Length: 344
Image 1 (tube, helix red, strand yellow):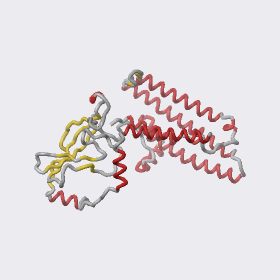
Image 2 (cartoon, rainbow, N blue to C red):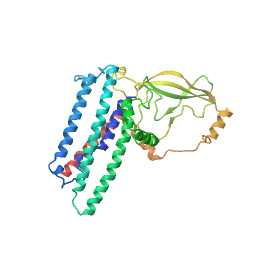
Image 3 (cartoon, rainbow, N blue to C red):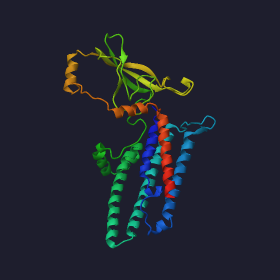
């Protein structure tokens, strides 16, 4: 698959961290002189622009980013050696942590100042100050735990984190409160996407594969994005006598391979056989039956699709995934523009 999509998902998740004031919503501290003169907002905007510009410049310089405007394509290649890259990481990780820590301190101090300058009687000022203190404590704890996940990029920085914070992180690790991000951290498929193809046979010579709705199988099948049940179809009218599982590596078909856009008759996938994953099993095998019964796989419950879900699947198959994503994007832009018009 295209792992760059995970970077886009990460960017989308980061939007939830933005302050409501960026979108023109949320409560403003009108009595705070930092807010009335926009000094705080100006400093935040300048620091954000400076950091963004620095990151873009570093990316273009060290990754040799080249944009071909004629073909509307971009290419890049890392220009650093392995040693230089490790040195850059050792320098960048502490600086990034320092920048984030200072930004957090400034935001916390600003929040406390605004809570003190909050309009109202002393009781509500005290409640506002207490609420700010509780939220600041939680945020500071989350930041400290995040440093442990972030610190895995550099061993020296990781061991400089206090042992007490690392101990708390280990205890909370099963709850996945903070996570370290990295390509292929929990993935496989660098040399192709491994897929297990389940096949059935009545004579042990001719085998037919089962098709599933959400996983690659038939190389001509369009990638599916609406899943309502597991098995798409069976190549047999009755359950076969034998069944086996084969392991293949799947790769997306390149654009040039089909001399044009992919459609329903094109091969979306290229696959190569790797090995036999599960040897042929017979449905008369007593050990297999006993295993299935003991693990509650037998008897098979009778599930039927509702008419509504079946209609959703049939309707969604008309659109390819790119068309659906672009449609959702334009709908979101149109909705946002409409709301802006009504606000003005």
